Length: 514
Image (tube, rainbow, N blue to C red; front, side, top):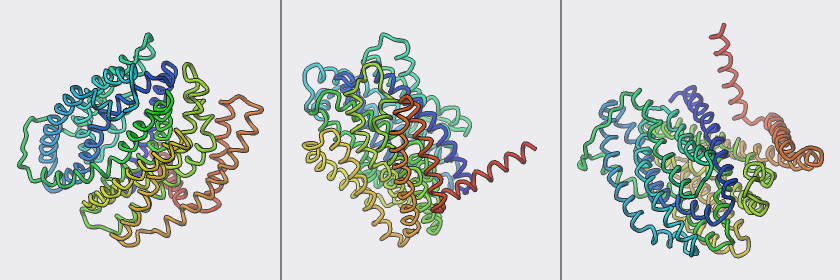
């Protein structure tokens, strides 16, 4: 993928992701207003964990192993053969998802006992009932993962970025209608899952994709996927496993703790998804392509650039969230049943979750680099280490810090994983511009700390003179200006690269207009 196409694709994904996440935030504010942090929302959040864990991990692993093989098939044998192979995998996957769905429905009581051992009485009964609804989403997850892989292989990122919209719309519509129940909310969530599949069909049809039902277990490419998939299941599932562990241990904390963790992780995920995940999504096919062609110089250059670009956004975002966690949570969720106690719990979790957002991006970039090199063993070992660290720290820190300890454990785990992956990739490839990454990171950290200090002073000054919302947005604007000034003075190259590309794009549009 050429440099301009990478920038264009990233711009599309980031724009759609921002809009999608804003809609998602609106959804979460409606849920918070309608239900607050109660046993009902605890049950809902644990119930949606079941399908996300049962298939989400495999879906991510399949998509990750799928794309390099689809790219290879597309280049060597053409689009038709690529579509045929995709249909074969998707048919096998859908059959597996039917079995998983049935398993989840039958053994829902046991699964809830495993993931929420401290739930009892009405909370346990409600979680079981909601789980039996939520497992239906596994069927749509399987199709969605296949469609996303096909479109990303074709370097079409628009439809995959739109799926978040479709998940949110039925939930928003349901709550706005009124007379809501938690069971109805779960049904709306499943309907959203089906719409994630439907939204991608026009783009697939545009690429002349046609569905065919056939299953061929003898395809050699399936064997290749199977050799790669188990390590990737472990390596790519760190986020899901850590989130489930947090909720499992959190089920023994005061009522509303799981919901507070969930809302905090969503605020954190918003920041990461808009920029970090967008860069990872767009760059992965490029990594796979360069590795497939054996162009290691470009491969290493793309890795270092991706890490620096993620740091350019994620480091100041982390500092900003830490300084403004309470005002942000109050602005987003502070209404209806979401009271002051809910705000305090969520802001504590958000502060500690935010410490890891930088390392989520680094870890995901480095994992994709290894997958592109068809090395799944290293991320697998790294993933196991990350989960063990998270479990041990959870059990220790929850005793002293409560909900904050669970969030901090996840962040420390992400940091260790990112550093180990960096070390392993350096051993495998040699130097991949490590000095450039370090130099850029130091400049960004200094700029972010200055920005954070100004944010603290600005909010303290503004809150005594303006309303809470005006103070928050005023502080964000002042902080952004200070950060831009600092990275300009310190000459952070990635910022100037972004400016140059923006100027070129604007000049190109101007010429067309004239």
